[in-house]
Image 1 (cartoon, rainbow, N blue to C red):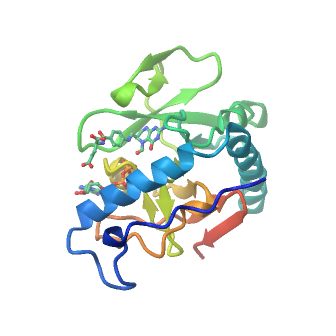
Image 2 (tube, rainbow, N blue to C red):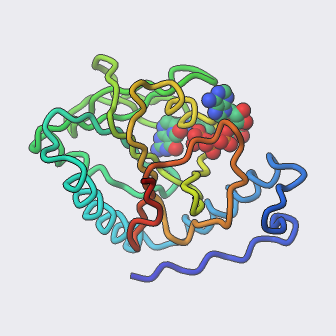
Length: 214
Ligand SMILES: Nc1nc2c(c(=O)[nH]1)N(C=O)[C@@H](CNc1ccc(C(=O)N[C@@H](CCC(=O)O)C(=O)O)cc1)CN2
Ligand SMILES: Nc1ncnc2c1ncn2[C@@H]1O[C@H](COP(=O)(O)OP(=O)(O)OP(=O)(O)O)[C@@H](O)[C@H]1O
């Protein structure tokens, strides 16, 4: 599979290693924009191959951590903006005794909530027009998979800038196992983590686990 090398960032968006950019919000916005463009420029076939490789790794990782998936609630996402599509993997969970969940933005600046999802679940449009389960009780995942726009080797993720996943990980108890999923080419030297950024326990890309928290 070919993953094109990421475009070189513009000079203004490339702070010196270790030095936080003066305007972090502007740096993150420019970085998000570059990463979105790079991801959208990949072929559908290469994104599908990446998703298949990551699904295999997820199975291996879960088998390493759990004797069985029975009873586990695992949240993920309904893909938008050329995100990797793991719905086929989510759809395989009920046969293994686990429940797939999708996030719902309950309101601005609030943690995400979750409802169970299967391919038969009726969907409705939520924030940003992202489809969300139209029915079902609120459930709490023990494992969260979240899409990464960018990531760094300390396990920090760059999302779309809503802070929803950080707020969710900060509020769900017990703290879920956080697995970030994205492209190897979306690695950044650092996202300049802030006090509210919560690192992932694992980051999986199409080239293998990139970050494993002990
Ligand atoms: N497919 C998918 N579903 C998902 C997520 C995701 O990353 N991918 N999310 C992962 O958490 C949540 C939605 N995330 C969102 C993140 C930002 C904004 C938003 O309105 N952003 C503002 C900019 C905010 C800012 O920069 O301050 C905007 O675009 O105008 C909306 C939803 C839940 N569902
Ligand atoms: N636990 C939190 N409590 C309050 N505000 C938070 C929390 N986590 C993040 N935020 C706010 O959310 C904003 C966006 O955060 P950040 O840039 O990390 O988003 P992101 O992780 O890229 O987005 P997302 O998680 O939605 O994909 C920050 O400016 C911050 O003020």
